[in-house]
Image 1: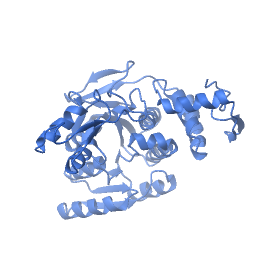
Image 2 (image 1 turned 120 degrees about the vertical axis):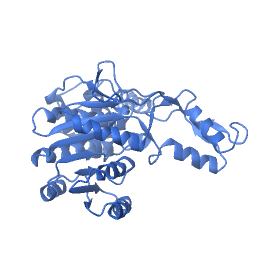
Image 3 (image 1 turned 120 degrees about the horizontal axis):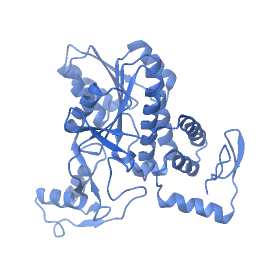
Image 4 (image 1 turned 180 degrees about the vertical axis):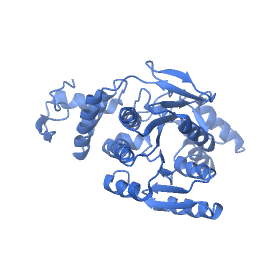
Length: 365
């Protein structure tokens, strides 16, 4: 077994639960050594009969991935490595492309080359009708899974779920910190809601979905009812022994770039199909235009290498018709057009004007 992003919240719990199945080898891959080091110590102490292999590597380095797969020959891959924080990805979209899209492509291709039996991508509800770069990049990763599954012996699948309680950078640890400091507790909007699931619960369902998938599916987990974030803030304040609005204030800060009021697990063109597990469903996705996907990713790779953030957003809107980028980028595009600013750049073998044109003379207006 091989887990990418093994040092993260989801990846580390995947490793813990997979160890319960007593695999011959568990390869834990991450590009950040500290978390991986402590996970390695924890698991070696608890499971002395399992061969744990900790590997420091980046999914962006395809040659390195090839060496790892050649050496260890994994049968099953759980791909949890990703840049996941929405606001940071809005400011650095080229990094989302390099990691979440190109890194996933590297891993998919290496898994095919070395005949991995199953490949499970950890996806997100933010890939549905995305409004931020992170969600859009994960939707493209799902599309790569769908595409590769048609022409590989490897069974590729993805699992979507919402927010997990207590994960790194999630809302509950933030609220607890703000309460401990005397407040205020910050909520972006009074009406914002999110789906929540505990980390162990989410990972258990991911593993189960990965075992009975036939390839090409995107699984959706039943996340229960959405929770209003402001209600969650009030509950945590009260559980901490304080009164909301008196002891601890709640401050409404406004939606961040790319943030939705509510998340969705399916878009209007997707349908849920029941599985043998009552909390796991399969969504039937639209057919992928293989040429457009390959071309779009090649364009994204070039734009990311040049740090052309606005062009990345426009290319993502071409690949994902349901993607609605945040207003800041739209304002920037409008400003460039109205001001007549021409920034000549070399792009896919052609000279283009700013971020508006691209190979194939597509109209981005």
